[in-house]
Amino acid sequence: MAKALLGYVGGPDPRVLAEMRRLQQRVQDLESELVRIQAENDALSAAVARHGDSLLDGIDVSKAEPALT
Picture 1 (cartoon, rainbow, N blue to C red):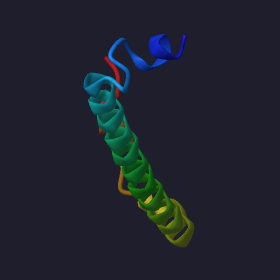
Picture 2 (cartoon, helix red, strand yellow):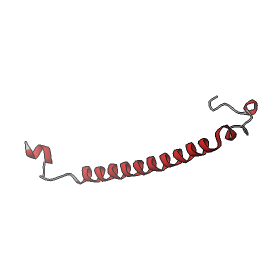
Picture 3 (cartoon, helix red, strand yellow):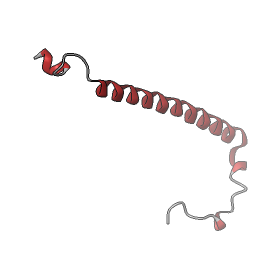
Picture 4 (cartoon, rainbow, N blue to C red):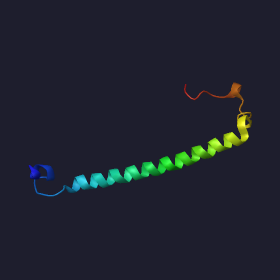
């Protein structure tokens, strides 16, 4: 049973290890991106709190294009 869990040669498969390293790196990259986006969101929220509606005053809604067509 243990051989079936570890592989037929006995030991971890190098392909599985490589895939696990790749996935761990991807998770780290996504976590870093999440921290960056959260910081950006916090900065934007702080700007809106400081300036209130004045940020939206410059937007001409009649000329705005829809986000989805």
